Image (cartoon, rainbow, N blue to C red; front, side):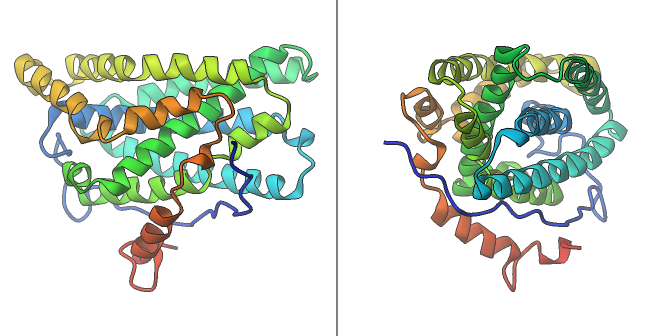
Length: 297
């Protein structure tokens, strides 16, 4: 049974981060783990163009959404995604200074976005390229579920939290995680509202579910080979750390099952109840004595 559409609205927080200030960031900023540091750097690099892709995919259907609550949730979703891209760009600038190729990944993503914008301008009729556009929305809904499950794992796993040893990067991930949980079902509900077919939703997630770990592994190894002389000199260590990452807390304790549930017929992201976790962390970060209150503008 699909969960009902939630009436809560994603909240856009004006926030700031100080990467490398006052404590300089280490080259391998995640527990001195070469593989994990490059995985996190790669994720941060793809977030800005990825968030822009998500916003375009949802905004494309904005005039087809008539339900007032969903329209407000879409506005909150867009506000949060734009802010996520902004602060990951700030981190990417710091990572680029440290030798990562983060800005190059952003540039590639930005060029792809310009192609999308050009096509939308030339073919404004949404019935043209109908399934291509629905596929992009289906991919957004699937990836939002994926990132929400990752966020849930981060917030519930002390072991995983301890692996992100740079305080400000960890703060960024905490903030990003709770907002992923706040808007986890918005793109999904837009997809349903505009009549996206169930078979396409499930097929797109099957591809993403199959490809993400191999893609992330290959991307991190390519990053190490291209930009990290210290990592290149220690291939055995990199392989061991990669295996440890795959077998470690990130992909265990039910995460793979939670991802796979998306391919179940009739699934809704709110079938996975994260309300208590979200409430606890909202207070932990942004309550009266929250650890990130001093980061709010």
